[in-house]
Amino acid sequence: AWNPPSFVDNNTPPSPYFIDYSWTAGAANPGVQQLTAFDLAGNQSQLPFEVRLDSTAPIGGSVSYTNGFTNAANTSVSFTLATDAGAGVGIHRLMRSSAALAAGTCGAFGAATQIGANSPAAPYLDTTTADGFCYQYQLVTEDRVGNSSTWSTASIVKVDRTAPLGAIDANPIGPVNGTIAFTGTTADTISGV
Image (cartoon, rainbow, N blue to C red; front, side, top):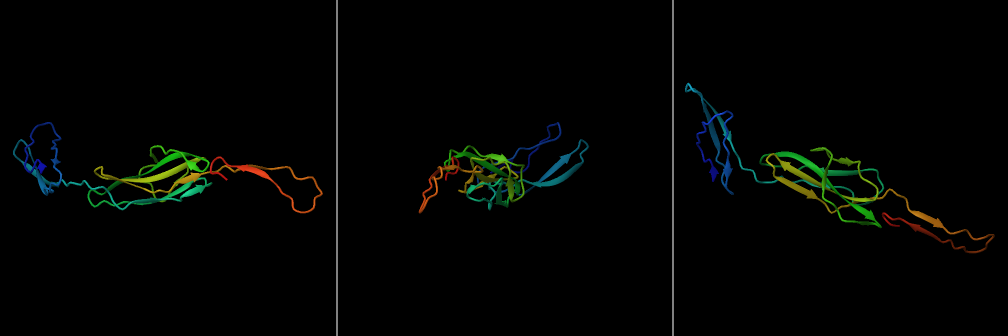
């Protein structure tokens, strides 16, 4: 049920006057209500209004980006905007979590934080990635009354912009004849060799 169900007299000054609406789970929308204002001389004016319950979160969003190792200076994040048949979509945010990358393995990811401004255009170009880190992205969409949905993917961007280290052992003393074996070492502490 809705409270107040219909008529209520709120003549307690000062202006602006207000009425708090509340409802129980599953209550049907009460429909159009009529607001009537009276002055001290008895004149009145009316205005219709409607309060609608919307407890349904937005649907249909998605987020995607390239999975795996990259040495690129930035990451392109594509996403599909959600829809909301109730109050309508309010804003969307791109969120990012990160973890250290060592020997090709990501550490523990921290909490996701917002990148960029509210409601960015797609695709979003993340120019703030750092060498030696893993990244995951989420799309969060909120409707106009605060219901929200989050979309994510299992993809992980692993950033390695550092070249491997290595060395070749000394060349054999020549002249030589036949097959020559060369030996050396190489290492990469971020993505691995």
